[in-house]
Image 1 (cartoon, one colour):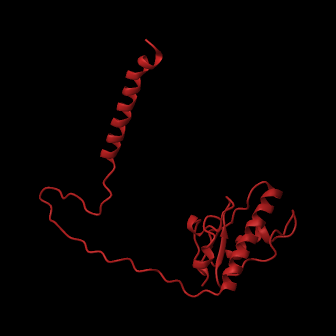
Image 2: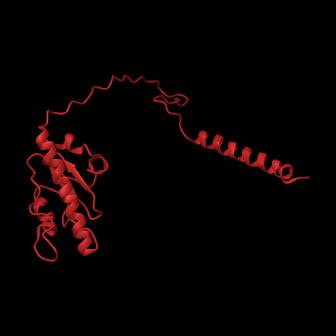
Image 3: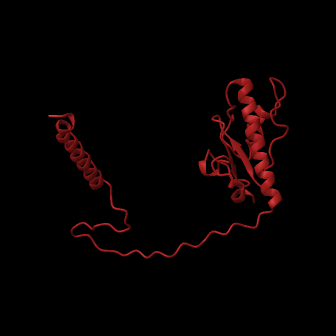
Length: 166
């Protein structure tokens, strides 16, 4: 008996086990549907949905969008230079807010120890540029502060300034 004949039952057994696993997985994953099966004795209800309305962004000035993108790239470069000199990215000392914005840039604007890594704190009139200790840089609309959001990351979403510029 050659090797192909001996391994055939094992090969079929492997396929059967794989198929059984897929069937079991599909049984555990709920169907992609907006309706559910009501429990016995439950009251039926209906849901009405409307078509999605397209989102219209305000007409941003191309110069503001370009400035936002350029400033975000300057902050990225400053963070990279800081990390190259210090061995780690700076950590903003406080959660991002209007009150902490300038102070959170202190590590990048301070003279000495290789700095300043950026000449001024980025403006907040048309957008806010924030960073974290992992080196992420993200852009938010003016006056909107918060933790890192991948959708606002300038590297993940290069068009983030289009939505953030106010």
